[in-house]
Amino acid sequence: MADTDLMDKVVSLCKRRGFVFPGSDIYGGLANTWDYGPMGAQLKKNISDAWWKFFVLDRDDMVGLDAAILMNPRVWQASGHVDCFNDAMVDCKECKSRHRADHLIEDALPEEKVEGLSVSDLDALIKKNEIKCPKCGKVDFTDARVFNLLFQTHIGPTSNDSEPVYLRGELAQSMFVNFKNYMDTSRKKIPFGIAQIGKCFRNEITPGNFIFRTIEFDLMEFEYFVKEEDWEKKFDYWLLEMKRWLAFVGIDEKRTRVREHTEDELSHYSKRTLDIEFETPFGWKELYGLAYRTDFDLKNHMEKSGKDMRYLDPQTNERYIPHVVEPTFGLTRSVLMVLLSAYTEEEVEGDVRVVLKLQPEIAPVKVAVLPLSNKLNDDARKVFDELKGHFASEFDVTGSIGKRYRRQDEIGTPYCVTFDFDSLEDGSVTVRDRDSMEQERVKIEELVSYLKDKF
Image 1 (tube, rainbow, N blue to C red):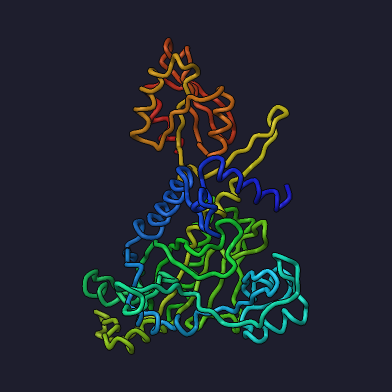
Image 2: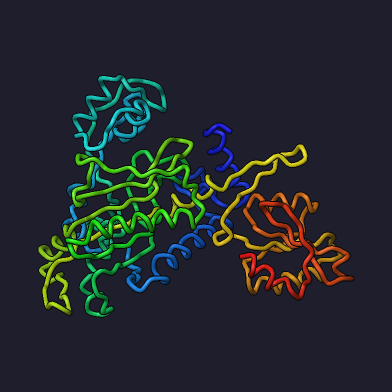
């Protein structure tokens, strides 16, 4: 199918099957805000839980953090975000729509490299190539100007007498400002990491492409503290672990690539950065990032706060500021890439079957119980009550058995259990595999252990 068709079909499935809804829908929505329905909320939670187990619980060199979204504004001054976290924007004089200058150029001139270009360079490219407004088609933009990506709000009874604060634009700073607390309480020895999952906010002028780029999003991230001489070895190690995670969560590795940042596009804090990109229906886009942040953040916070952020090596008694390798995972983007990877259309007996081939570990529903007739509902529910204590389960009674199979295929349920009239006689049920559609008769008393073996 064409790429645009795939995106349209995934978006349609997400709304139809309760994965993702437009935000504030009954009031006409709010641009590029999205709400996660029952299936989407569970899928998102399953991915974040799997990530936490994969990178935190299953390791002895990682600790967790759940920090406040609002921080002292001096944090963002010290990190450089107030001065450096900027993009260039232009307004269309005709239709008044607002656009990020680099996105306009990327869409109109895919071969043009825009990373690292100054505001004046971006402005010159737009004018030289007479780039049209994507909303109205006119070539009449204002001069490009800088805007800051941090969302600003206020603490206090009124905006006139209150202090401005920022909604966090990244998770990293809370890990850095808590570094001393972790040294005092966790007794971790370098190398070790501080991990966090949480919401971030960026004042994107032109967000879009469904849930790919939004003003409110979720990140999964850790800061891994190392000796300076060890950063390259750990950088390579974490790239391999990130690739292993891709396979584990079910993101199609054939549609991913690693792109190294050029020197002129590196962030102000980074000495080396690469992106793991995914081939979406709207082009190659960043999914995850891996950055070597040197000692920039801890050194800056030590200087600006006056607090000692050095690590005391218990073996050598040497004090030094650790360097940092930072793997960053977009949770919101992971949901989209998992859906794009899992979406499958198959021809079955002259009909098209739509199925989400989700990894069983992250599927929102693991097992669905389907009584063949309403007369069997009470007996089938006993099976369901037993299963739901072990697996995320659903009791589905609406429609023909074929339609119910198709619905469970569309939400990615790995196994369907059909309770029929023979079940009353032989104490067995039919278990259907989502991917192969093969069916097997299983004794009810052995059903839990059978499914545990499958998972």
